[in-house]
Amino acid sequence: MTPRELRAFCLSFDAAVEDFPFGPQTSVFKVLGRMFALADLDARPLTVNLKCDPEDALRLRAGHPDLIVPGWHMNKRHWNTVTVDGALPDALVRELIEDSYDLVVAKLPRADRLRLDRP
Image (cartoon, rainbow, N blue to C red; front, side, top):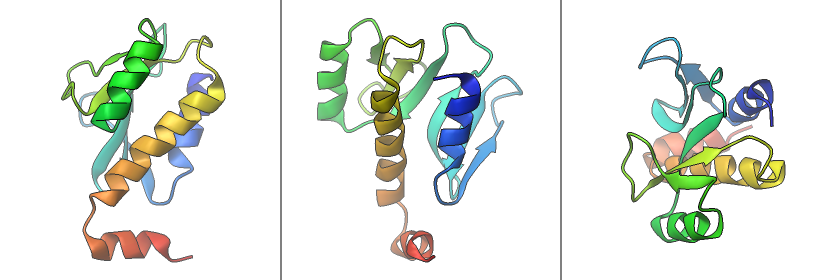
């Protein structure tokens, strides 16, 4: 997955926006003001921080110890840093991004979740 593809996929979700609260180098993807992905799209290797269920986070880290590690500068229990250099299948990376988005949406107030469900 290229940086351009990563950005496009993150922005493909309902109400997703890109913001730069930590400076111009860090793209922060949010849904209704809450972060679900962070990445320096110019970094090599490309990595992305993603929210993750704590049990899934441990399983993913064990299964891919060189590519999925505790979230850098994030709550290590709930965030993973995923290396996006082609070693992980793009389908898995997309699934992890979607899971992160879904976890954040699930924690939104009910009224906001309902707004997202409307066509």
